[in-house]
Image 1 (spheres, protein in one colour):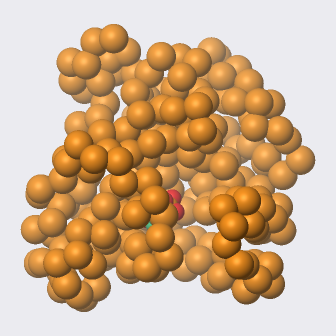
Image 2 (cartoon, rainbow, N blue to C red):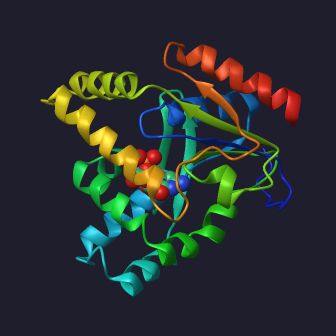
Length: 228
Ligand code: C5P
């Protein structure tokens, strides 16, 4: 596969709220197309993890933006979803830790951090194409993407999926707390002034509430075939 960077390489954006299945769908679509994949949530999570490691506070704008200049992240569309390497080492477990999730949502609400990460995210646009997973891929980072998908699911279904995932990992979880946390995170992400989680005007909205992963991937591929 060519890895040369081409400004007009095709891009498929997959945006949506937490727990809608964007990572699994993006990885599945990228594998089927043989394209690159970008997990923009992991970009914010990597900055958050570096801030925690170096004791940089969530309101230290210059400290946080300096971290954005020194990121070495490689994404792979694996059978189980998007896997991430930071400075050559696998970091999936670290990036999914609760303290990193909380810090990443604070880091992601700082406009200076978001703009410091724009070119970095755009540098993943390479031939033969890119599948970009996030909240603002179709609205801000790749507004000229050839195909934009907004993947949604009811809050009950998303909380259920997250609950099962955590239970399978042997974690002790309280469904009601998880549900309320998800609702609160949705509200923050939808109502924030910078890059809120809203569908792009030209996005194709898919509600995955009662769909299997395989069906969602087939639906996205059908949209890609029409538009790319
Ligand atoms: O998608 P994920 O849960 O990994 O995202 C981690 C954090 O980064 C979330 O708080 C989310 O709001 C933020 N994020 C963002 N813009 C993106 C991707 C993620 O603000 N494009």
